[in-house]
Length: 93
Image 1 (cartoon, rainbow, N blue to C red):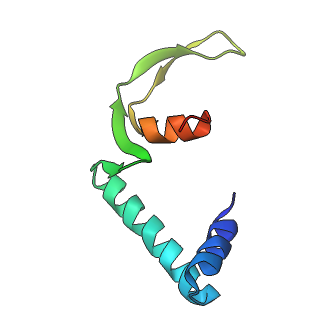
Image 2: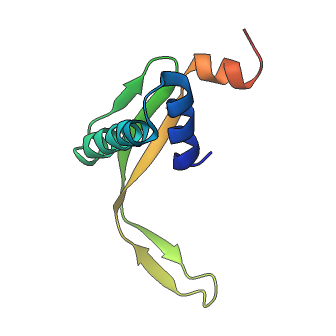
């Protein structure tokens, strides 16, 4: 599913214009992005949690040359689905 597909479904379900639907979808994504950039969690009941975690720097190896390299620390985004979403995906009621 693409962003355009989401906009189309919001348009069909809400009755808003396509332009309004696109603005709503963009606004939700912008709010989520801003919240995650600030390091806050996003918890959506019945769906799951988005969390930004830090990864420490570590030693790695270049697979082509075998040379050891330093992999820098960075932030990663994780998603943990709720039990409700897991159940829906697995066909459970």
